Length: 575
Image (cartoon, rainbow, N blue to C red; front, side, top):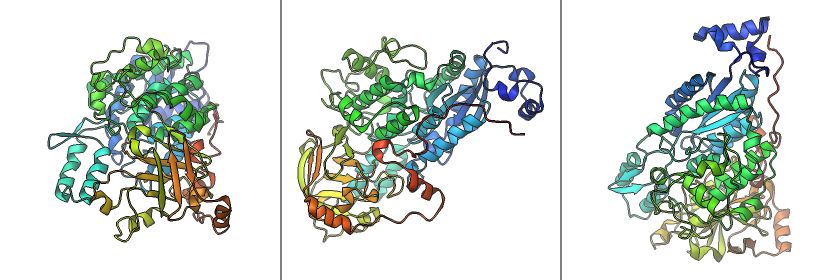
C-alpha cells in the first residue's frame, strides 16, 4: 500500500526519516505496532462514545473491537480514540447543552491526529449529531455505526417502550391508577438489555437518519444492540471505511441536498422525533447544504407514516428489524416517488440499488402505502405572531381533535414555576386551556431541555383527561407524545413573543393551516415588551460561551462560529 502515488494524510506524521516522524512512530510502537503499520496504509480513527454513565453506549467497547477487525481485514490500521459521551438519561441540565461542545472536540481531535478516515460509534441521542457534525466539519471519509436499540421491554406480560411508558406510568401514578411499588418494578422491565431506546425516540430516529442520509451501512437503523448481526455490521463497516479512503469518498459527496430531502421524508414515514429537525439543520449547516425549517414542512407534509411504532403506534424497534427494517421503508417511499433513488451511499452504490431487494415480513409493523398509520405524517411547521420564526409539532403523535384549537393560556415562566404550580388545586385550568412554558429554549434553559411535554395537572388526569395543547420553546423526548408545540422561535429568552404571553390570553392552534396565533393586539404586545428585560448572562465558563453563541432552533441551535466545513489540512509540526 505504501507504493501508491497519492500520499496519505497520515504519512505527514508517520512517513519519512526526520525527527518528527521518529517521535510519532516511536511512541505509537509502545503499543506493540510493527514497522509496516506505518507503511502508508490507511489509518482509521474509531471515535468511541463508550461510557458507563451513558447506558445506551455501554457496550461500545465490544462494538469497537469488531470495527477494528474489519479495518485490519481490509489492510488498514485501526486506532480508537474517545469522545465526550452524551447520555440523555443522566446528564443535567440536558445533553443538548453539550452537543456543540462534543462536536468541537470531535472536529479538533480528527484534524489534530494522523487519520485518513473515521468510523463514528454513536448511540444515545446527541452522540449521533455531535460526532457527525464534528466529522463533517473536517471532511475526511466518514462512516457511522449506531449501537442499536434495546430488546423490547416487558412488564407483567405487556410490551413496554423506553420513555413512552415512563410518561404513561408517571401520569398513572399521579392519577392514582398505579402504585409507586409497581412503578419501581417497571424500571428493570423496561431496560433489559444493552442498547438505546427501542421506541422511535431520538436515538432510533437518528440511527434511521444516518442510514437514510447514506452515511451508514444498509440495515444500520434497527438491528438490536445484542443481536450478533449488529457486530457483523460493525465489522463490515471497518472493511468499508478502508475502501472509502482508497476511493476518497467523503461526507460532502454523500450528504447532499438530495440526501437531506430523503432523510426528511423518511422521518415522516417512521414517525421520527422532532429532535431530528434541529440536528439535521445543524448538520446541513456544517456541510454548506441549504436547508431550512420550511423544507421540513414542504418535503414531509404529504409523506404517510408507514411505521407502526411507539410513540405514534404499537410496536418497537426489535419488531421493526424482524419486519425488514429501514430498507423496506426506503423501498416503499421510492416506489411512491418520494425518494431520490440516485442518492449515493457509503457503499458506493445508489439508494435505489441498496433497497431493491428489501422484503417486508410483517405489514402490521411496516404498513403498505395504501394503509398508512397516518396519511400525512412528517413535522408540521407553524407560524404566526406567537412564533414568527416558526414552531413545530409532530402530527402522528398528537390528538386529532386538538389539531385545531382555541384556548386560554395558563403560563409557566420557567420549569421551576411549572413544577411549583401544576398541581396547585387553586390553579385555574381545564381541558381547553393551553399550557405555555417559557425560558426553556437554547439560551433560556440553557440547552433547550426535553421538558416541552409537560405533565398535565393531577386534577385533570383524575377526570380522565390525557392530552392538552402545550406550547414552549423547549424540545421533547422523541419517545414522548401529545399535542405539543415545540421549538418556538424566537425563544422567550431572546425576546420572542412567547416571553410576553400572560395567563388568560387567547391562543389559536391550527395545524392544517400551519398557524399559531396569540390573539393579543400589537399595541398591547408592544406595551408588554417595553417592560421586558432579557435574563442575565451566566457569569463565566462554558455556559457563558454557549448562551452568547448558540443560534435559534430554526438554525439548528449550533454555535454561530462553528457553521461550515474547515477542512482536513495537516497542522504544523508539534516539536
